[in-house]
Image 1 (cartoon, rainbow, N blue to C red):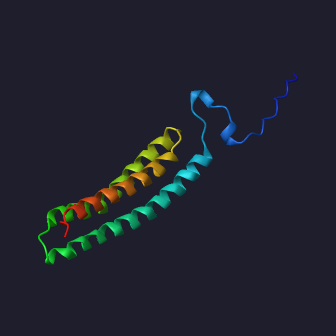
Image 2 (cartoon, rainbow, N blue to C red; image 1 turned 90 degrees about the horizontal axis):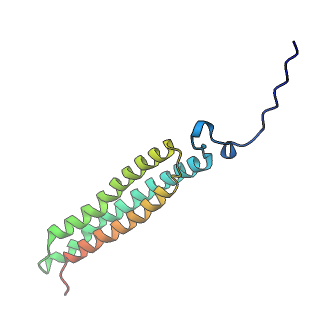
Image 3 (cartoon, one colour; image 1 turned 180 degrees about the vertical axis):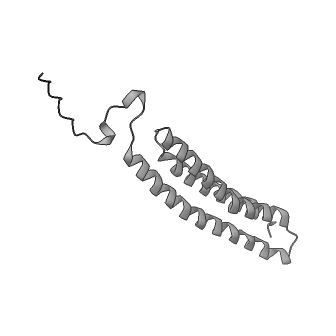
Length: 133
């Protein structure tokens, strides 16, 4: 009636634990880094969209010459709205990747680069609406 004692459980961190039943391991560092980068991305989105609103200043020179105000408006709206759309895409993509237990920290980094590129595209459109002197 003597039972064999069970071996003690090994104390290992969550990141190095073998996957149970074929699932990927939970990477706590990836969750923390992704959340922090998404919070920083919200701040970058606010900054970039505020600068996008300032692209309307390109129309100041339109009193002395004929400008394409439609193109200036498109550039301003592009530089203001696209960062918010990219933020939404980044949040959704990060959540999906974290649920699937795949690396997700790269999504906010790529989105930050795309936000800056979208600002410069919007600035280029707004500037193209003002003819040279």
